[in-house]
Length: 404
Length: 79
Image (cartoon, rainbow over all chains, first blue to last red; front, side, top):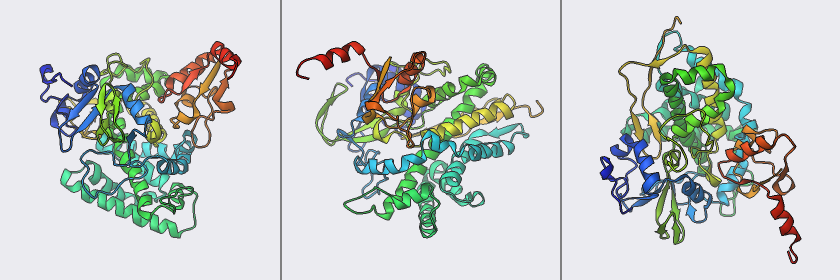
């Protein structure tokens, strides 16, 4: 922390004056990750009450696993606005957290996710049908944003496919719209979820994910059943955590293939290379940049003396680019020997939807290779990003020869 | 070869099963099944697959059991 990082030509001292919402972090993301993991395992932010940033893979893993020292119960964002409602189970610790996870996990295991394969595949092809003959698309807007919502609302929530328009629109505003419209988008999304769950609670159970949340079997809060608001927040948390993040990985997948026809050719020819290639894509395009924890007791960790009450960000996206772990972290190498990454987190809060995300990525890759001619980036186009807790690609203009 | 899975630390990523399903089984909730106190007797010929599954575990809770250490630990008087 004593070394300043401006000497490396950064527009900001990311070591001592870190700001996840800054333009500099967004613009210098890959190099910041490499510099932090190389030289500054505990960076510091001076914003508000201040926070720390862990970036090395081993440190991030250890802190994420040690939930007693690094608690989620005071939320995942630093300088949290007063009175902001908590999201469950993400912003809670065991045992309450694990009660929810135990009852929810059965809907997200590889086996459980597999039952939605045909439905998700139909959505993938429906979206590709929408533009494949056109010879161009904005992959982010036309594919990567709509797909995760279709999969979640239809497969998991059981919303009829012709009724998902309004909730898709609200989520789009909440996650990707102009900043000033995002709280309104969230309000509309939560109202939809609340009303839908109230309706479903009156209907005979279907045995699906919604029924599991409503029944909350085995979940107790302060000696009784969990409050209704917690149940609504469980669904909202999955929306918030699952939709935009999958969008970023899907965006990155197309961005890479558009620039690397040699990888495309290999993946087309040898399907056995695809799973590892997708792990590498999720490493490189890890959507969750950082998520926070509150230090519960004085502890020396990663060479720093933390005090109880300190706020620490676990840099999942940064750890995916740890120079101590990955050779050339800013290069996508579909044959990479190191198979583990931090994109889906670690410990009790690890991403519950990772297998659903992998299913969507896998079916998308298959469809791109089978259905879309070799595509490239529209000449002159370069994507822009937004970074904060999560990272997002705003647009991706692809072109191809539709008669190919 | 014997493999140990620390079931307490398993959070259900499912990567061991994804890369080596013939060695690592998952339960209905997606956790490593960890039968027999988490000790897996790797069938001959599947050692490489077992190691692939070990390396794929994000939590780093899968390890190779050192037979010599186990033998000496279990034979130490008073333990």
